[in-house]
Every structure is written in structure tokens, then in C-alpha cells.
Amino acid sequence: MSMKAYVGTGAQSAAHFAKKSLDMDNKLPLGSLDLSGEICDLRLRGIGKSYGEFALQSVSLDVPRGSIVGLVGRNGAGKTTLMKIALGCVKSDSGSVELFGKTRDNLSGTELTALKARIGYVSSVCAYPLQMSVAQVATMYSLAYPKLDYQLLENLLERMGLLKSNPKPHRSYAARKKVGELSRGMGMKLQLACVLACGADLLVMDEPTAGLDPIVRDEVLDILRECMGDGTKSILISSHITSDLEHIADYIVMLEEGKIAFASDCDRIYDEMGVAHLRGEELEHLLASGYIPAGQIRIVKRDFSWDVLVPNRAQFERNFPNFAIDKATIDETMTLVAKGELR
Image (cartoon, rainbow, N blue to C red; front, side):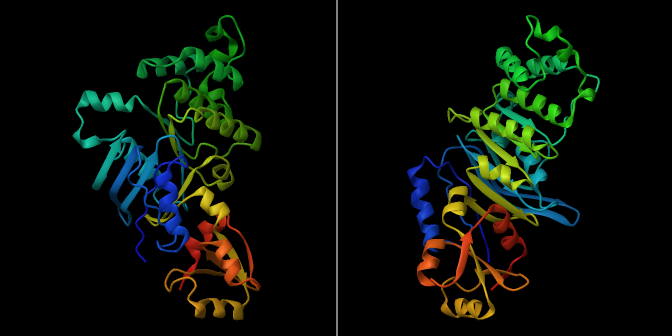
């Protein structure tokens, strides 16, 4: 089955609900979401990139203004490569990148520099030079981002435990602490504080909570939720910790072997989709009924039953009231899309 998935703007849009309702009625392939008409801070169209035996294959997605898009998939699916292309660190073989409504290849050097100043990047590791102090990292950001808000930076660093309250905070012991002395969690907090204080409108975050303890992860997620409060920022975030995305993401896009295999708004996954747990004869009855179109039913064999991804849980319950079905999760959806047998 060919799937062309676009991720569009957030839950505020009336167009979003109109298009979403088509998917609910099974008029679109499972996992398709066409919201390409929405205002987006990042738009990727037909991105292709080959590395030996691996290739991104015509990947298209949108990061809508005021929303968080979660990018998921197995290791090697192409998430980091796609993010590097979006940031301009890697050149794609095909396709186009739009930043804040402007095609990047059509921009002059001055225009591109101005747009890049509106983008912040947080990686899975703290990549600042190990001998730099916290204060020196802040100075580095002030040189790269003229709009850096020192007061906000100091407030964030103090809140995160990186900069103790002090009449001269940049002369405190915490400010003099070296990057190489920071824990993984503190290094992630330092990145996040600098990016948020620099005035970025679009955040690109590659596994920002990987390796963090639950308390630090919750702190990072709380700060991200707060920064999205005014609806002017957007985030593209990849993560293997799907429980984090369940708390903050508006949309989920799944990459599998360099292609978009699934794209949906999160409300639909939690509120509408389901996973049916069927015995052999129940599965045969479902297949024979034609309820899910041929070639679109995804099945995974368990020890004593079959799991089936259901597009509309309420509709399924009306049609098959005696069949067991639970709400879907991101993890279950990923498993069924990536590993499920397609019938």
C-alpha cells in the first residue's frame, strides 16, 4: 500500500477536524493525514537521500505553527538524517525544505541567516566543548543569537539548578562549572535553556530525553509545555520514549526503512483507534466481513491470540460487540505498523 502522509497544523484548526473525519470513516488509508494547507514553520516535501544501502524515500511532513510533532521509528529508520536535512546540515538528493513559508534554496545568504536565527537545535548529547564553562556557553549563544534574552536564560538556568541565585550570577561557582563536569541531565538542561532563551520559533530536538532519569525528564517536558503556551513556537522532536510523546505531542509521524509508514494526530490514536485481541475464528470472521479493506488490515501473532490495529474503535465495537478491544497506544501502533502482517 502506498502511503503519502502529511502532518499539518495543530488541534485548533477547523480544517484539521474536517480532514480528520474522513480518516475516521476509513475513506483514507490508515495513517494518512493530509493537512498540507496549514501554516507551517517547517515543511519537507519529497525528501530523498541515499547512504549506501539506506535511503530516505520521498519523505513529506509538516511541522505546524503552535504544535509539537513527534518523530518515531526504529534505529536506522532515518530520523536523524531527516532532521539534519531540515537544519541544512546535510544536503538532500531530492525534494525541498521550506522554513517559515519560504523555500530554502530560493533564499539569499542574508535571508537564510535571518531564518536560521529563528531555529534552535537540541541534540541527544551535550556537544559543547568540555572545557567551556556554563557562562561561556551563554556568551557563545549571545554571539550567535542577537535576540538572546539574558534574563530568561538566567531564570531558566536557576530553575534547572545550573545557576544558583546570586547578585552576580555569571561569577558564581555554578556559572564557572565546566561542561565536562555536568551530568547528562544537566547538559541537556543547559542546551534547552540556551535554545529557549535565544528566541527560536522552531525547535528541532533529537532524542532530548534519552538517558535521563524520570524526574529530569518530567522537568524537561514541563518546560517544553510552558514554552508552547503562546502558540507561536513549534517543535519537531524524535524520541524512543513514546510515553514522553504521549504527554506533549500533537502529532506522531513514524519512519520505517526511510519511508513514512504512519502519520496521525495523537488525539486520534488515543481516542479513536484501538487494538483488537482476537482468537483464530474471530480473526477469520473479521477478514471475511470486509470491515477493514483488503490490504489495510495489520495483524501481529501473540501466544494465544492475534492483535489487529483498528482505525475506529467505537465503530468496531458496534459491529463486533463480542470481540475484545482496547485503546491504542503509540507503542502498539508502532509495533503493528512496523511488524504487522498486512492482509
